[in-house]
Length: 131
Image (tube, rainbow, N blue to C red; front, side, top):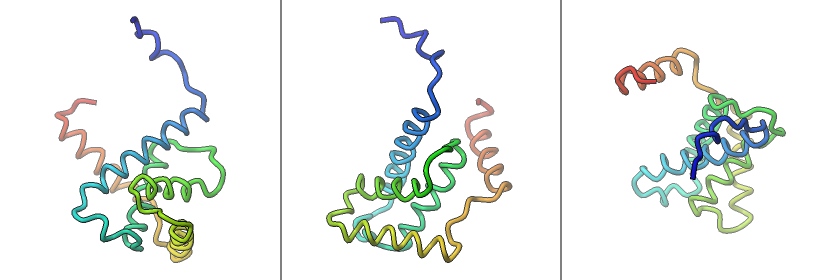
């Protein structure tokens, strides 16, 4: 089967957002699974903050735009569902309340320009200058 021409098909912004959101959830779950004994942190505010910070930075750096307000809460819930941490409606309510608390406390912020630039430079050098 010849699939060379498929790379030239443009995706709509809605499809781009849908695919990017799915990739963000997979990347976050993959990173979190590296934490030893992750199940002990099931409903921890520290874990919730870590996930929220990852969502905030990944959404901004991957041009996830045009979504309705509150979509990052849905992404966070999807991450917790994929980890198997949501077993009842109270778990979702904990996530929503925790995110509201962290947001109102000013804890969920995007990394600064210098830190983002340094990370890109580090990964560029790590790959040996290959883009």
